[in-house]
Every structure is written in C-alpha cells, then in structure tokens.
Amino acid sequence: MALTVTNINTLQLLGIVNKTSTRQSNLLTQLSTGNKINKASDNPAGLIAMENFSAELTAVNAALDNNQRADAMLSTAEGGLDEVSSLLSEIETLALASVNDASLSQAEINANQSQIDAALESIDRIANTTTFNGKQLLNGAQAIRTTQATNRADNLRVHTRGQGSADTVVNVKTTTAAAAATGTFALGAATLSGDHEIVITGSLGSQQISLGNGTTLANTAAAINAATAGTGVTAATGAGNTIVLTASDTGSDSSVEMTVLSGGTLSDVARTTGTDAVLSINGRSVTADGLDVSYSANGLSLEFSMASALNAANATETITVKAGATGGGMTFQLGTESNTRSTIGLSSVASYQLGGGDAGAALSELKSGGAADLSSKSANSLKAVRKAITQVASMKGRLGGFQKFQVQTSINSLTQSKESLSAARSVIADTDFAQATADLNRESVLLNSGISLLGLANQQASQILTLLG
Image (cartoon, rainbow, N blue to C red):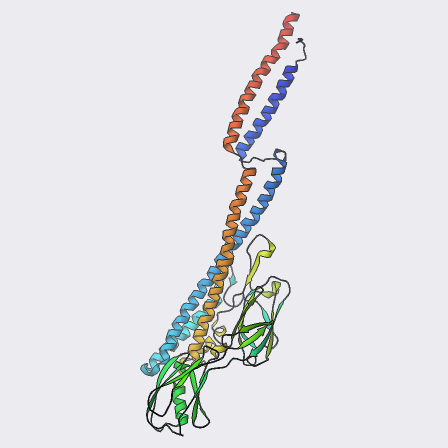
C-alpha cells in the first residue's frame, strides 16, 4: 500500500468512532429517561403507536375517575335510603302496635303518634340534606322529568331513560280495570239470631269479632268496620239482609275471607281475591300489581299508580319523558366513548311523595292531624307505610343494580383495559434496562477500541516526517 499524506484509514476510523459515540449517546439517553423512544427519529412507527396508546390510556384514566366518583355518589344516596328504610320500619312497628288499641292507653297511642311525627320529620330532613359535591340526591332534584296529558298517572317515577336527543312518548291505555276482592254473607233476617264469633281476614291480617244475638245489619257492618285497620276489609249492608265485604285495596293481592268460629246462623265466606289492571303501553300488554304499574323497554324504565280516572276500560294517558339537558336525572359517562353514557333517576323520598296510589294515603298523612294518623284508626295507615317501604326498597334495588352491573362492572373493565394498554405501551416505549446496559457496555468497548486504533492510524503522518528528515 502506498504511503501517502491522505490517510483513508483515519477517515474510516473517525466515521466508525462517530457512529459508535452516537449509539452510546442514544443508549445513555434511554437509560437516563427510561424511554426507548425519545424523539421521532428513534422509531417513527413506534412513536405513532405509543402516542395512540397514550391517548387511550388518558381516556381510560379519565373514565376510571368518572366511575369511581359515580360509585361514591351512588353509595352516598344508598346511605340516605338505608336511613329512610330504618325509619320506615320503626313507623310500621308503631302503626301496627297502635292498630290493636284495646291493650293500649290513650297516652301510649299519643306517644306512638309523637314518635311517628318525629320519624317523618327525619325522613323529610334526610330527603333535603343528602348531598354529594353540592348536589342534592333524594329531594327530587335528580329525578327524570316528565309531563302528562291528563295527570292520570300518580307517583310517576322514571328510573332510567335512553340517551337520544328526542323526548320519549309513552302511550297508556287501560284494557282491564283493577278491582278489589269482595264477598257476601247473609244474616237470614234483619237481626242476627244467636251469638256468633267470626274471623275477618284481609290483606292486613285477621281479627276476631263478637256478634251478639239480635245484632242488626248496620251494627254487624259497623263491628266489622271497627276492625278494618287490622284486616283491610270494609263492610256495607246489601240487599236481602246481606253484608258485602270489600277489600280496601285493589288487585290480586287484595283478599276477603270470613270464618265462623261459633254460631249456627252465619256461613263461612270463602277467600276471594281482586283483579289486577291490564294496560297497553306503547302496544305492549302490561299487567299491573293492583293499580301499580311498572314498564321497561328500550332503555326506559318507569312506574306509576293508576288514578281512578285511568282505572277504567279504554281510559288513556300520554306520558312524555324528557330527554337531553332538560330531561334531568343523573347521567354518568361509564366508558371512553360517547355512546357509553347512562342516566338513572332518583325520585324524592320526602314523606309526601311516598305511599299514595293503591295504598290510599300518602306517608305524610300519618302525621298528627293527617287523614291516616293513629287517631283515625284507618287501614290506610299501615298500607301507606308498607307501600313506602316497598318504594324505598325498589329505589335501593335499582340503585344497587345500576351501581353493581353498570358502574362497578365498568370500573373492573376499565382497570383491565388500563393494565393491557400500559403493558402494550411499555413494550414499545419503555427501555429494557438489561438489554440497554449490555449494549452500552458493548458500545463503550467499541468506542475505546476505535479511539486507540485512531491513534495508531495517525502515526502514519509521523512516519512521513521521518522519511523527509
């Protein structure tokens, strides 16, 4: 090889050393940042994938935060409903104890009424003070909004609705009216012959009634009506020296029965039950529970009690469920896409909003001076309380179902997605420290070797000077 001043070996070694130094610098950057991709030129395709994964992770983290807050909000509402349920159980106990007032003094009944008043005040307070992040949950502020054409649907509660922008119209038509259970027995004469002991049984329970010899039709009916609060059965005089027994509630759960314990003039009245209403709702046949109607279809779930005007064949009502921002309710973003929203409504649990409908009285009417307070000895007292218990239990069940099968399921799914996306992003973006350290050691050896060889190559210039000297 010719000995020249232009040293090709030196230039080649310089190029190799520069490349080795660049790779070493990149490895040091990866080890110091923990990122395999620190600029677009490191891996253009990988950068695009990494950014996409990062965007998905951001959306998943936001959705997780939404769901966790929703879970906390629903738990707060459930806590309020639990307290209302406990108070309703206390009210039921007091009302039931006061029905059998034969063993209670008036002072005890008054004390029970005072406790009921205090419990009802507590229910109203809970309804107005259960809040989350400044939002009231149980006073109706989170209810789904509706309108009615003729206001024949009482206690209308919408539990869920779809996410469309158009209002949902619900057309209701009664095909079969609900009826109460009835039964008839005859005295055989204008007055009862002989002493009798009978038991009247209805949906609220049984009461034994004593009827003496010579008791008139009117007095027989009055004796039965005096026990209505414990039986749920009323009596009225009928044609031909008969007594007509009628359940004070409506539907297949209502019942009437009379058993003769002693006395030979009267005969038993076999147990009879009432009839549930049947309605056509948006063309679909729905059987009510007495007068209480539940309907679910296409993401819409609602319930209401039929007013007397609706409880007639061919009677109609049109309910409009509001949509969008004016529709009310609590709308939660459960996933990362816009079509994963879901709305649930929380109706008021104030005492004037509970009971009613087929129960015949609102819960608030149990307060002192109300139509169903303890002094009225009304069968509606217990019915209103039990209807309220059922309503609150239904709210808790629907709330719990939404929380378990919507929110918590979404949390579990999003958590799994977060793990999978993080793992996929890590494969592309995160530095493999073991591999990078090994590569760094290799590049360091190559760089030191290159620098040493570069020194040897540079000695050729010195050799030329020696020849000239």
